[in-house]
Image 1 (cartoon, rainbow, N blue to C red):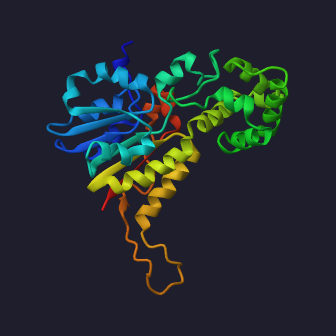
Image 2 (tube, rainbow, N blue to C red):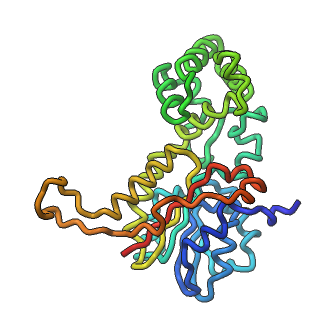
Image 3 (cartoon, helix red, strand yellow):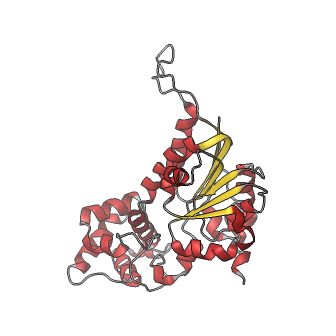
Length: 311
């Protein structure tokens, strides 16, 4: 099957959320396979699309995937949390819309050598940007037992975080843990039989936690939101797709803060802080995939789309 048949999550909903103008300037902060980007740029006539990704492989592939529209596209190798710096370098005070799909891109998961998957044997890497120094091997082999327990519990919401952290530390005392499947076996050895029989793969939560730690994902989302909203033009839209509760909580809280404005205590008779709402929430509740999309693309099952418009 051609890669061009790849259908990104909540595609129609994202395009509607962005309310695209043909002459507008837009930013796709998570280029990935360029599925969202293709649909955005196809709607531009005189407009411009800035495509950002931490993974140079995604930018290289975009040269082909976006070939018919490259005169309207600017490719940027950077973490999306640097959105303000990206726009400064391009001499753009603001844009008319931004989209951030916070899921791990399919090529990263599909390429077993990247170390994201618990189904294929590979070196423990998990870096979205291969130029960064911290790898999954560093986390697994050098972080303290307490720090491992903390990230497994917080980032993976793993019930057996203490047992798994302990098993990792005991195993690495003999020799460094080098591969994904070796880590999977360690995780399984630390879990009770009932957990191994659950529908979800026993290593899923641990791998998620380590990936988040390696790529500093949650802090990056917070930084992105604080820097992106002020760079929206009036009427510009910010659309964010999340895939797990930790990300969604950050997005929901941050956008609610921008939409509220006043931060005075509730018992103050009048506002003294002077803060005004910066955005309006386009939807009070997140948009979720249809049953049809979830059947056709299981990856979409946990997706949530939240959108805000600059006032």
